[in-house]
Amino acid sequence: MTVVTRFAPSPTGYLHIGGARTALFNYLFARHHGGKFLLRIEDTDRARSTQQAVDAILDSLTWLQLDWDGEPVYQFARAPRHAEAAHSLLEKGLAYRCYCSPEELAAMREEARAAGRPAGYNGYWRDRDPSEAPAGVDPVIRLKMPREGETTIDDLVQGPVTVANAQLDDMVLLRADGTPTYMLSVVVDDHDMGITHVIRGDDHLTNAFRQAALYRALGWDIPQFAHIPLINGPDGKKLSKRHGAVGAETYREDGFLPEAMCNYLTRLGWGHGDDEIFSRQQAIEWFDLAGVGRSAARFDTAKLTALNAHYIREADPARLVDEVVSRLEASGLPVDETGRARLAAGMEGLRERARTLVDLADAAAFYVRSLPLELDEKARKILDGEGAEVLRQLCPDLEAAPDFSRDALEALVRTFAEKNSMKLGQVAQPIRAALSGSSVSPPVFDVMEVLGRNETLDRIRGVL
Ligand code: GLU
Image 1 (tube, rainbow, N blue to C red):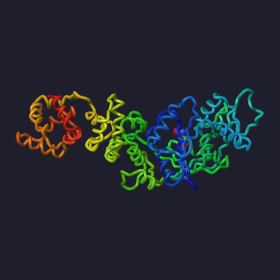
Image 2: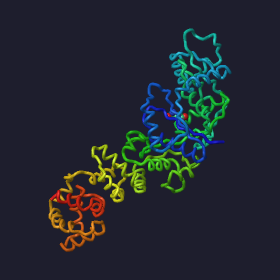
Image 3: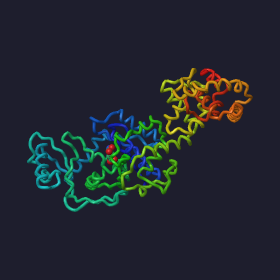
Image 4: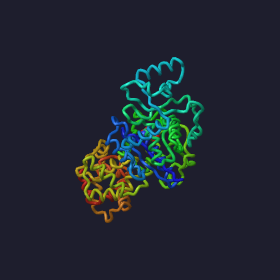
């Protein structure tokens, strides 16, 4: 059997973290088994679905490199096929028309509540003769659910889960206006797409019982279900905006790398021994549903950030230069060829301390700013005191330096400090302030080498 999974987002907003992880698990499971990973856009809620949300979801999936197979399936376009399935059940006597008005349904619920029964539909039209149908009422179509016995789902994450069939009322398949319900659409689409494994959030677990009954009525094989626990915030409550960003695209804007996101989300609810850092290839090799835990995972931004810092240190420097350039330019700071060359030369020093691409771009900006450099408060303090005098004395040595490489510069500055009975920091800090406009920067001799003699002296003279 070829494994076929799917991710089935409703395009009513951005791709949230929980959705991204569901997509990732479906992707990894399919790739692990050499199968297919399909995408279905569940756009049947016409009032809430937008093209903008579709674009945002596709964009985020592409960013996370969760490439799906084939074209996305749009659920709304398949409504006639869904209706056809409902009508086939009607013909076989496995579904029926129900003419109850909203008032009657409300009264039914009230009665059930008073009697302490489950508040579902009581099957009023299930065995009634269609000749009793009231005139001028468009009926809904309901499935004849089994009334006795129980339904068990052998969930690949939750284990066997059983419900008494008496708990499941006759659900609506087609609404009075002929539009299919989610329950019907999802089953027909999963069947037609050949889905073998439905991996989704455990908020859908109760739907699986009803969906199983629908598969049986239609005479179709039931896919394997795997309901994965939801993601909670660090406080153990359902992840929400209160916990900060919840959309994948916000993490992208905030400077997280897709490989860090994927690594983190894979570990969220799934484990492979003590491994915390692994590549996409390893995740594909290792991933299986047996490793998915049953309790809700907690989203920990600090852990994600630490992983991101790791991936920034591992990334191809040329890619980081591109990222930094586009962030600087978006913030209104144009980067010319010289600036780009400095970023490339200085990237090793810059990335050591960056936790996000935002940090990286902030730390890198001084390399491309034009002179005179604006000094921050601390830099100004360093240069207001003795700093300026130190630099004034140092200038001739820098002008005359035979070699402007980092090691030679370090030796030169050390000698200068010793000669003047100063600590290295008393010389390095003013240099740093003059070159970067701040009190923090990559190692100062690296910065001097990257800027070169002329720019270094221009910056120093600029603050004197
Ligand atoms: N469209 C549903 C959702 O976004 C998913 C349905 C499913 O996976 O079966 O929650």
